[in-house]
Image (cartoon, rainbow, N blue to C red):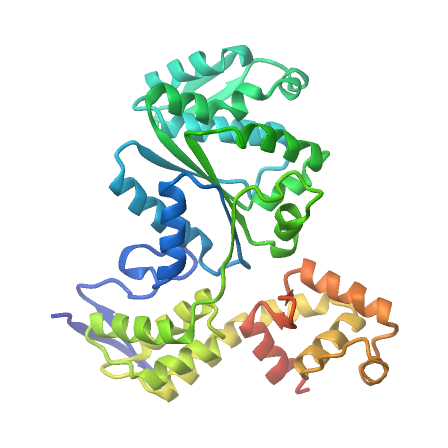
Length: 397
């Protein structure tokens, strides 16, 4: 059984310290094991792709659970196949080709080496042309650098781009290389030429598959859906949707029950709807409701937790809104009001949007700034808490 100790009572909210179990909801970090929400269809599809070494492109907005999904699929596949390794690389802070090559080489060598001596030997064996230098720090971390100039490296990066395949063949391994925030390659000098380099090598690999994913949906769609781009039809394209409300209800009720508390389906549904099924916010709102619950959660607890989250974010929302132009704010108001024909004459006049060409420009800017999302059917807000704040606080004034 799970026991709790009453710590404080403040403003009608009981705060309990759990003695045995951890908090049952996870946000802002990788969700694994029992914290992972049931994306069974997407998980099976990704596992099947990893098992068969099928290249995969995974696209969804930020904080929808892409990384957790990839990690879960990778862990399951590695547990089933002793010769399969899943290698994760985050290129969020990578700004040019040189940094990319170093990050790629380091992660591949670390994942396929049993010791720092093995790391050094593999670097020398597979990357000898680049005069590799391996450093070994007291905290047992190895790091790779190249002894040739960037100009020389830029001319012939073949060994680096084929490093995973060459090691996999030599060691009889199968590798899945997962690259997060892949859209950042568009910031490199001459991104189309760089993509062509990657595609020309990676499409020939037989022992290695690539899982490329990121959060800038509009950029990734251009990279992978444009017939004129090098990565067109590179692999299985997965557009990650929100987790359905029905799955959230089951998950939320179960996690409350796992810790000796009760959440009724109607209140679980309320949590999912207030967070618009957004994975990050559903977990956050559920966690805050769980903290406030002694034995049984109820509607008042959920609503109180929701208001607190919005209030905590209000300063951030206010600062972000101050940076928007008057035209952008007017467009947000039109979207909140449910306007579908944003370029219609009546809408342009009612919301002071200027011309139809200006609306097109405003939409593009708000999508690029990850405020709005265009699903092809309608514009929607990426952040449900920001949408609520605009409705109840900003425009209410």
